[in-house]
Structure formats: structure tokens, C-alpha cells
Image: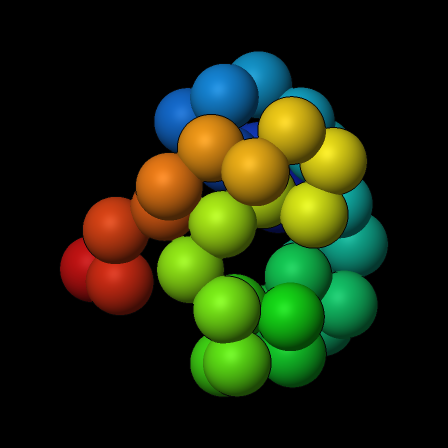
Length: 35
């Protein structure tokens, strides 16, 4: 599992795929840095 700065957790491969196209949390839309 991977956790974003907002606290939401996701399967690592799923969130990597999401973040390759968007830089926000899928649930709360908090901005996520790309590092």
C-alpha cells in the first residue's frame, strides 16, 4: 500500500498509474508532489 500526504492509501501500482497522469489524490484532490 502507498499513502499520500493527505492520508489516503492506495495499492502502489494503482496510485502510480493515476499519478502518471494527474498530480492529485483521486479522493480529495489534494495536490501531490512528483518526488
